[in-house]
Length: 178
Image (cartoon, rainbow, N blue to C red; front, side, top):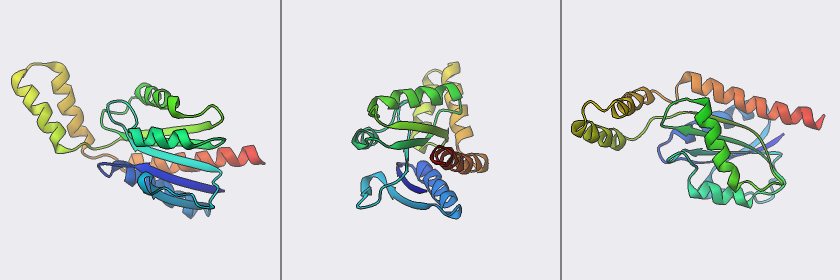
């Protein structure tokens, strides 16, 4: 199967997951290409499946990702990304639903995978500054705890889940084409 993995990554978290997906597909002997979204050029490559990844920004995909998704027509797409704010499946579904506004109706979203990613230290400093003003504010304390938890992500479990996601997506399409 021909797969194209493209991503936008500011912190390196999504790039790490994109590389995991690429390596998993390559080791399963699929014809796969990997490029950052800013460098994406398909030339004569016509993939059966696009893997499109991004770091979530304020509960949404970056504008460049939306612009790219708008260019796709009659394609099979698998979304993936990293999120600084925890691992809630409900939140992940919410992100997917918001991104759908960029996906033309003639495309099919085959699935999605999101995992937690570490955030820049500037985010923690912002949380600390708020905490200094409001030391007993529970939501601020929770944001600090989440930041510290995210420092180890994407972790080995996230990597394994990304590998499983990649294979699940190509296997799903393989069954459709049988």
